[in-house]
Length: 79
Image (cartoon, rainbow, N blue to C red; front, side, top):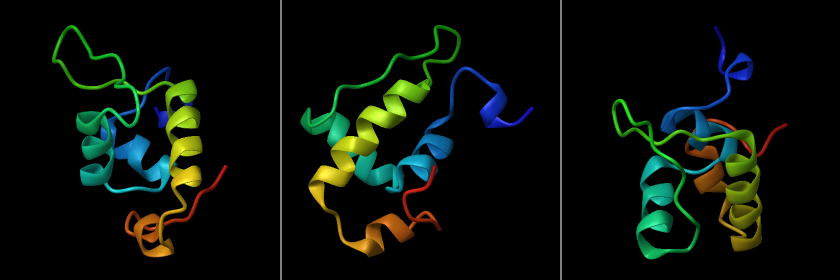
C-alpha cells in the first residue's frame, strides 16, 4: 500500500513531501516554530496527515529556505 492510499505518513514520507530534512523538521517542532503532530499510541511515532503536511509546507515556503535544503530530500516542492 502506498503512502497516498493511507491516512497518515511517516516522518520520512512527510519530510519528502514537505521538502525539508528530518533534522530541520525536528528542530522546528522543538523550537515551537510549527505545532507538533499527533503520535501513534502504539509506538509513539509521529503520524502526519495531509493537513499537517500542507500546514508545515506553507511554513517552509514562507521561510524561503535555500534550494539546497529543498533538494536535500531529492525533490523540490511537488504536488
